[in-house]
Image (cartoon, rainbow, N blue to C red; front, side, top):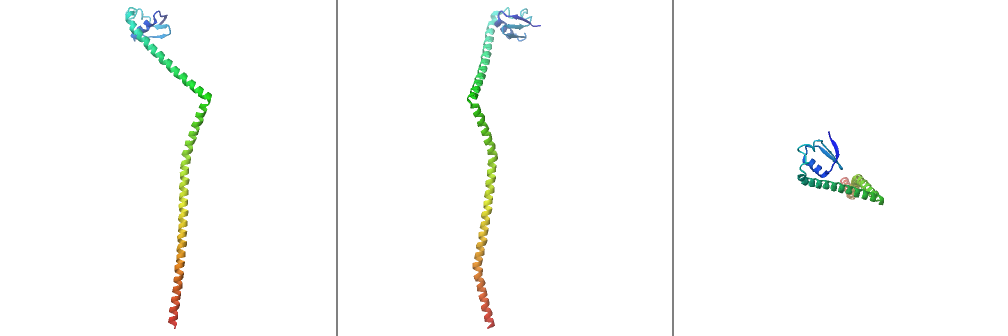
Length: 172
């Protein structure tokens, strides 16, 4: 069973407990919870107070380091909370949220609009190429027809005239 007592020399008791891990115990402020056989056993630290002073100082250093670490972490948390509250009070948090929303919307729009613009540009280029090709074909056909008309009509006239001359010569 565990018993509870008010310690007269807490540092010595802590040093005793830390030097003997086989003895279960814990501390809560100035109250030390120890096994009943800690003070009565031959392995207790009560007879060796002078040897426990060095481990007592190392235990104190460990406790101080732990306390300083906890206080530092608490200070960091307090500073972060103060900064967030101050930013919210000034409206910076709202601005940050709006900026994030704008960035997300812009990124989404870019993801949708850029491919859409590329598709539209490709379609326009294809339509322009097809229209230009059709215009070129029409121009070629018109030019060929005009050339043919310019060449064929006189050629037909020449053929008809030559044929008429041949016919007239044969008849005469």
